[in-house]
Amino acid sequence: MSLLILSATPGLGQGQDNSTSRSPHGRLQIPCQNCHTSVSWKPIRAIPEFDHNKTSYPLVGSHEGVACTRCHTKMVFSNTGTRCADCHADIHRRQMGANCESCHNVSGWTVTLKSVQNHENRFPLVGAHAALECDSCHKGAATGQFQGLSFQCYSCHAKDYQQTTSPNHVAAAFPATCEQCHTINTWAGARFDHLKMTGYALTGMHATLDCAACHVGGRYQGTQAACVACHLKDYQGTTNPNHVTSGIPQQCDVCHTTAGWIPASFNHNNTPFPLTGAHAKVPCSSCHINNNFSNTPTDCYSCHKADYQGTTNPAHASAGFPTTCEACHTTTSWLGATFNHTFFPLNHGGANGVCATCHTNPSNYAIFQCTNCHLKAQTDSRHQGVGGYVYNSVNCYNCHRNGRGG
Image 1: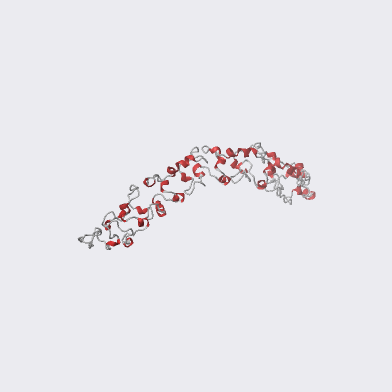
Image 2: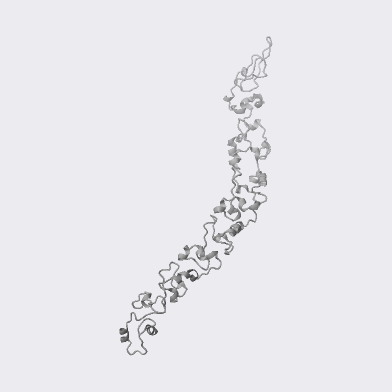
């Protein structure tokens, strides 16, 4: 350790004995007058000529304005500690560890943005949380609780939960897991997973409605999921068709979707009368006259009586055709009708399926002619010796019911 040899003691007058003393500061390689005056050892100069930045501990930030004796409480300066805790008492009661610089810096005790970001070690501070002061959650400011603090939203936001009225969370028995609906950015714009939480998915127009549109009066528990629970007035007020007088069931989703009341679709295949062919394109009112949906007849003739009576080729009414239209026609079209000629081959001889070949009277299909094709001379020559032979159409049919000879 070097010695500073003092030739005179400050404050001694002329004629007094000179003496020598050992420097109380230890190994300090600067002249005494850089800090002391010639008047006395104390007080030291207001601005000592010492560059602390050339030491292993530069003075920056708030440390620059601190008096030397605030840190150097001992005369040997080299024995002064350089850790924060050597000078600063830990008011956090060791909850945050011994490294003050993990949150604070030399500019002040105010927590830095970087230290907020380091909060992610346990509970990331993002969104609105990043802008909060520490004591917003850690009550009691610096002396508050930092370890073992609950991460649950409700632990800080119980009052928000209890005081919310739109909707009233307490009355509605909403869960206290705030993050299921809210984000960490803001309370507003909350989203509720209706399918996950209730089993009732909000689709179509339902997804755009305010909660109060269905949960009237803030009632959330026990809300009916059936369409008619909310749409009874729509059901009762509908006139095209009139749902009430027509006896249409109140299961709205059978015909309607959540996309809108119009257009509605009805799966007629679920009824005893599936809609096929041209029937599938006909407006409901064409068959359900006067909005009669409950007891509409299903036989063809009930709707197609005018078609039956107005047909002339052949004339169904005068010909005595049965009114079971489906025996000849299909739902695709009236044209191209087929008749199951059960009693006589349809393509007999030269008829080739043309009804008028045999049925010469289109007004009466009970009348038929064989003699138009089978001439008398030819027929007589083939029936020589046949008992009871008479040349006429009725007798021909009586013997040749299958349309063949023999």
